[in-house]
Image (cartoon, rainbow, N blue to C red; front, side, top):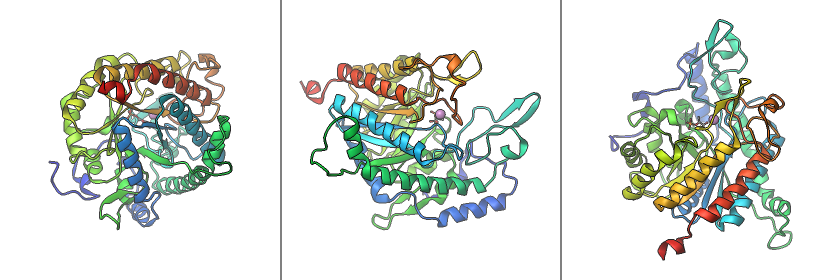
Length: 426
Ligand code: PEP
Ligand code: CO
């Protein structure tokens, strides 16, 4: 299975889930896909290789991965201020984690392409009217009317262009970023006046394989296929079937990739996925992103970590404490409590310490905006506060205060639960 020939379109012969098949005009969709294939890359293969090397350091226990951003980017919320807000927040959190953990932090945004959502329910019913669910601005619109909810291929182009603009902003902020950060943290740059550019990378869930295929190009320098839509792509919890199209597509690209590992994943299947996705055992190629829920992490994670340790292929182990901790508030808002989010991260650190595995990363849904979407935090957001500034287009995000509090608590936890490589050797 793993050695059969791969091409950017070989996924089309496999079963796929969550890719819309209800576009009213398939020839219009095909024209858009062809146009995307002609448009410039959003990222360069050389940068992507640099991320893979940085993640290789994480796999070796010498660095930490911080990955975060919106659940779903949207056309409406796009502005330079919002991009800057998320960018700066990630840098501040990375600063906190760097000083506490004493190791470099690899910074990866869920940004510049994180638009498509796999929805658990294909349809939504309001007052007896049933329409297709909202699936992210790249597919359809959020308003509850039949026209908005119909998939529109022009949205693929709009998402591409917004991603290109976001990329440009992120690159500009990264060039000016380091001095800003040192000022924020009250430290002077090492050499006065010198600007140290920040390494900042982009990522999104590789859900729409037609788009990913169009963005996948041969790198002239190495002859390898790179998906130029982002530096890192990940496979979602709902699309990680071993014989499915998503795993097929992802096994052929050279980008570092993530794999969401939820409560139903069995160790044997995880090992098969590792062998399929990273047969050569390249360090930094594969990041496993656990997402179990605070009540299940202690039961589900140890067997998976033990399996990867026994198997021996290098992986980054990261934790997404968001997607297993979502609940409905009594007033109907979809929310998450910071306490449960923290509990899952602490559970992750404890299991990793017990299994002798490096707790390598954190994967978050967060924003620099002052939203009220998750409960708790420094201002103790309550259920009654949720309606004040609930702006997300999909899942509830941590706001800036909540994210920083989490970073401080995780930094603390890393200090107390993680043994240094020297301790391990002793
Ligand atoms: C996500 O990261 O937005 C997501 C849908 O996660 P998962 O695939 O883990 O449910
Ligand atoms: Co989400």
